[in-house]
Amino acid sequence: MPATTADTASQPAPDGVRHQPATNGPRHIAIIMDGNGRWAKRRHLPRVIGHQRGVEAVRRTVRAAAEMGLAVLTLYAFSTENWRRPEDEVSALMGLLKRFILADLDEFAENNIRLKIIGDMAGFSPEIVAMLGNALARTAANTGLTVVVALNYGSQDEIARAARAAAAKGAITPETISAELDTADLPPLDLMIRTSGEVRLSNFLMWQAAYAEMLFLDVLWPDFGRDQLEAAFAEFARRDRRYGGR
Ligand code: FPP
Image 1 (cartoon, rainbow, N blue to C red):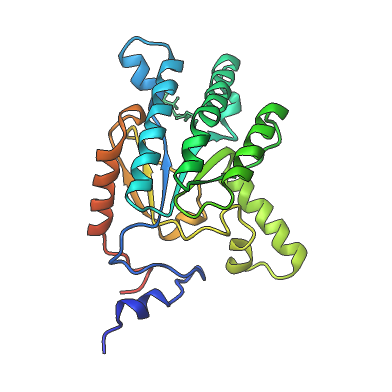
Image 2: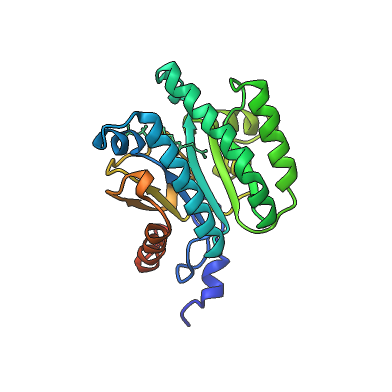
């Protein structure tokens, strides 16, 4: 007898993680929000304006994701490599992050949205760390969409940290490493989206992307919103996920 949807759902994939049936929509989407600078350049505007418009795209996308019933939206906001950008751009990004938390935290709390941070908080100012700590605590009990913001995040760093933690406890296996990743409490990544036409992972969720569908879009991040997210759901539904099987 062919496996039913429920049977398929209960079978762990080779990475040891249980995956959802292919017939459902995505539960966990991650986005590499690329193209803010190019969006601004095309309009002869300063890069920071592109980042500001990028925050508006974050807002639209979070609202749409919550309304569409997505479980987890993971956003690559600041990589371990982004510290190499000019000081004024780094400080503009920090300012935008602060303003985003201040302006949107109430909406998160009211809409049952939980905030989670992945990455290494060391390096951020005490003010930002305190602000993020407060935002995490205030939304910790929420059960709707989880918005994961990757800050000072690098996948190689995360895997190295997880491997060290797994080794300290005993065996190093895919399962024990998975259990130590920053994302250990989240459902498996279903769909990775990168905007701006670049086709690479840039040190983002490389372990978690093992069986994720990939979607590379030509749209620049400030132009992303509900329509693009709905189109991504539709594209995901057309994909045939086999996890290495047939
Ligand atoms: C890539 O554009 C974008 C970033 C490095 C930062 C993403 C940050 C935001 C959208 C704003 C802050 C986020 C939150 C959650 C408040 P780019 O500058 O690399 O663009 P380019 O490749 O066209 O130059």
